[in-house]
Length: 146
Length: 186
Image (cartoon, rainbow over all chains, first blue to last red; front, side, top):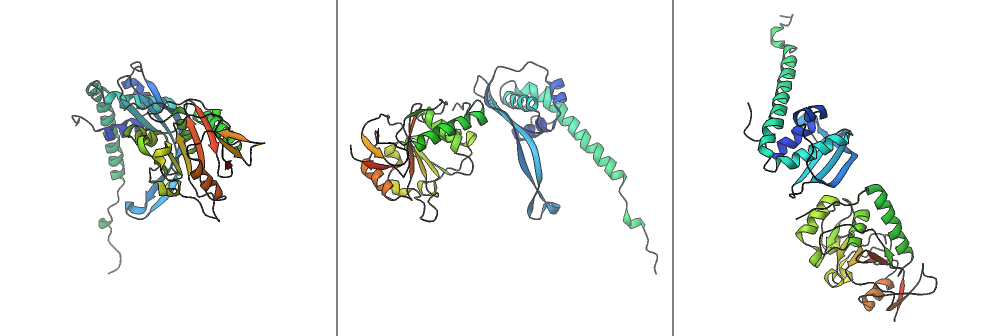
């Protein structure tokens, strides 16, 4: 169930999708000392889609995002790009990203990432099960003619 | 590599620097002071302010000579996102005067589209109000500025309305030499 360690790409997504309250509950520590590389700034990004995931890309719509970058005293740099306009979440996410790359990362993988990952998997499974329950099997229908 | 913060307040600071650069461009030879921004050596604080204000993902940038170092490229990638290109495709170029090389290597614009020319940021040379005599739009009588190569810049001005616009930066100082300025000897 729990992976030994997630890649940076995985945890950036995991942190970005987690609600701020959940991040705060899992990682209530005071933030470490850091300097801003880029203070949280709110902007818009164009999200692209593909019909059936194979067609030509089209512009689906704009989504509000907030990004931030921090540097720890040791020189490690952390980035966050989160949906919405919550600057505190971007700050929290960037700090987590930076710390996960340091020697404190292993502990944080266990205390923060593992529960987030478990919750996310559970959510996906629940949704899949709920969707599966509404599935109609058309093979059971017999056509009236003949 | 130590990345540093750009503008503390991007919208306000960029607007302020834009106004200062505009002031320098409309008064060729005038030496103005820009807020200092930490940038990797050998880029001067003034040049960094100009880059943060004028360059973004839509303006190809050419880094010449010693300015084309790893630290500088990382800085450009993080703060500007500008594509790094050779001189012939550049909208902006940054370097010392010798490193930037012959002016003919850069886009000069065309008679129909004179705006499609490059802007050079000549970094490092000390700026003093002496040397070449400048006249033309934006100068009441005459102005003086230390120029690196008078003959090459005269040839550039002779192409008007085509030609390059040049910003000289040193420390936190900036002076501009638009293509419309006439350069007459000492």
